[in-house]
Amino acid sequence: MKLYNTIKGILLEYNDASFVIDEPWDTLINRDDLEWYLKAKTKSATQLTDAIKAKWLADGSILSPISRQEVWAAGVTYLKSRDARMEESQVSGAASLYDRVYDAERPELFFKAAASRVSGHGQQVYIRKDSAWNVPEPELTLFINSKGNIQGYSIGNDMSSRSIEGENALYLPQAKIYEKSAGLGPCLYVSSAHIGGETAIKLNIKRNGNIIFNDETTVSRIKRSFDELVSYLYSEMSFDYGCFLMTGTCLVPPGEFTLNVGDVIEISIDKIGTLVNTIAINPKHKSN
Image 1: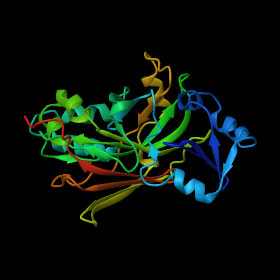
Image 2: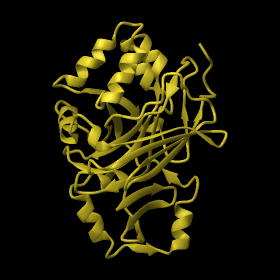
Image 3: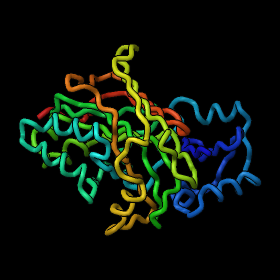
């Protein structure tokens, strides 16, 4: 089932029908047994016609599935991600850092975004003015409730300034954390079962209406289990409203590629849908 946060309210898709869920978003998604609870709610919830559903999910109506949660991210969880990080950091001499963390017992985890800096489906994400090498990183994203239980999945776009991180690994926060540096959506796919390893993740990048990069992979290529990543994230922290965790990427454009303003990023994950973001720069900030 799919749970949408929209400007009109919360919409649940289940068994080819759509329902209105009249509850606060944070309270709703943070409960245990979310899938079971939503199934029970469909027995009394208002059902929408297809025409009304279309209005609820029209362009510009879908919000990111986040309110008071934080977004965290795991790095170097796929072999291709390790290789890309090593490539970009050759000049700084930090390539071995990524090689070691890929095989280390402890995963790389980092804070990605507060909810106010997250863009939803159909919205803009930014590239930094002080970075000459920028890419999207499509990532299966977990929603974990406050008790540390995975309740659902979404699509994450972990925007990355490769030139900044490559210059010095200590610049990771600047490469990863800035205004509109994360996309999340279009919905929360709610399932009590772990999403399967055969699940496909696809990336299309369009420029002037033409596809200039596309690739795909499957979740099975991830090195670490979801439960392992959640265990480390929650080992010394609590999240009162739950947390979103991007689980890493295995889709990395070639070294000569960088995003331009106006490029359109399309990330599709089986069962969840497609997240679309357009590249822009922050109009409020001047170049350094």
